[in-house]
Length: 373
Image (tube, rainbow, N blue to C red; front, top):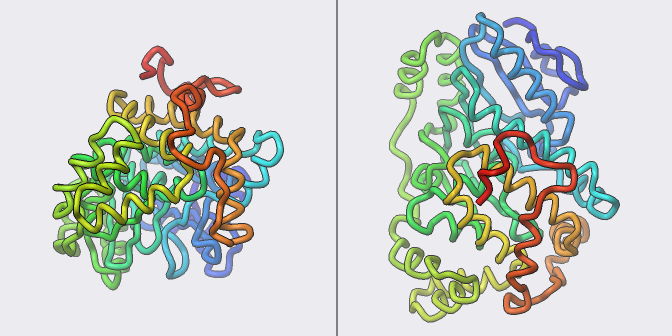
């Protein structure tokens, strides 16, 4: 084990000492660069400093011939990452929103960096993997879930929209399963994570230590594949494949109102429950999410989708539903948000279109903006 050559933005080089207070632990074991998100009390929720530290480490390891691959995991027993630090986003949204926009800019650039990382990037998606946790894992090369994995994009519940490349991933899930997950904010277990393309392999949690040890000895892509193959098993069956008969039929509708109507009239009890769930979400978020997913399907690359997501995310900072949703779910925890508008029919196409206008501080610079949908 050696100290990483990376120079994190806030913490300085970090060794793997067990008592470190660093929020991201960075070290090299064998030829494996190790990233451990280290805020276990917050289920390793990401803040801006953590995003910058990760990006700095990846940049350094790309240039280091002694590092063959990178592995990311989370400290503690609860999960890889519960998402972004939404309390900070709430505080920023109540002001001018500059801090939240700056965080998202660097976070989405990190997501793009992970996707195009020149070396194998392996994510152990054990436990809770939500929102920003999906962004630092599901764009990697080798994505491992366990029996404890709960993977999802819960943004509609807080008046936000799936980001960190979430609309790219969900728009490319089988049939309309991604639309269902995005509009209901429903998490999935390991079987459905693999089925929808959010993960690749299922490894029982008790075998993760041995898998990690094998990966420290890898020096080729074949070694990585062999290590994963030795410990992976068939994922337990999920629910989505068997629900495609109503998911595809209902969510293929052109409007959110029609989706809800189809769900209610289909006759399947799970479809009716999904309608109830959607009607409890922010009506603005539901309509913007549907538009974002449909546009993302037409965009050719993750980078182009991240540009779109940045525009949409910045627009939510001036929407009352983001502040209200976080208040209801996280701050006061009364679970009784007062959405404005409070029904789907009151959200106009003109209002939805405003979320796709250019961000105040300009694009991320990942693609030519002429590729916009």
